Length: 349
Image (cartoon, rainbow, N blue to C red; front, side, top):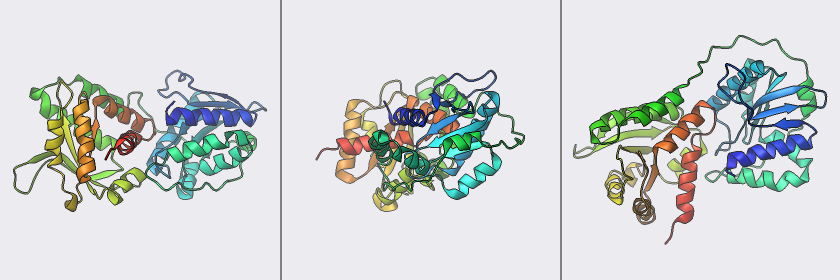
């Protein structure tokens, strides 16, 4: 199981150990796009519906929590249930927690501190909880949770607050639309420009809180080279902070390849020439329709080993995965975390 599925299973085991009936992966009610990850019922019959989220960062970004809270409130009303619930495998900053609770007073938010208190009551789950929280932070210092006393039965059964009006949300989201549009573009040189334009649009949607100063078709100083896209890192996510502080790359180069075949090592070495460590531009992300072949992946590892330049290869499926994660309030950066973590762990001398 991947990290998210293992976290889901831990949450279900924890709630059952606390005496709740817990279900997962139920289908959405009529007219609602989202399916709840978590359905729980207390001994007194009170119910809560919502989701679980774990980010590859010490804190859950504020924008992601707001998006997830809105989805949970829609699910609560559509189900119906007494409470919406979000279970987060990261720290939620108190300021953001208060802001979201003021908007959605019938929402329960349990972060890593709440989970630490609950897990302490069930020692059999302790090692699993520790393994998951450590694995989630390959580019972060592992923060020690501060157990926060939590009474789930009391939380779910407490009096409700009359709900406010919610904005209308369309069933089809921007991420799903972009994924369909990208897959519909014919492969090949004739549609390369259209492919690049749609890539930039998708990346702006995915990384709107992580990257800034978007410069498509940026020429080099001598006008001899053109980068498909150059951006600057401006993120609160630990992965991007590690890219800046540990890889010394404040600027990121994106290259887009609308080839029918997998890209080869030639494309790796061509992109490497765009990177310049002393200019804080030592990372490139290459997005191709069908990914990179084994020689290209080996070349990227060789470049990292020899010069410290980081070239990450993604395909269209990876991009669509990030688009869907973004629209669902999950961690779109986890795809990049996994790619870089795998490269570093496999690197040979």
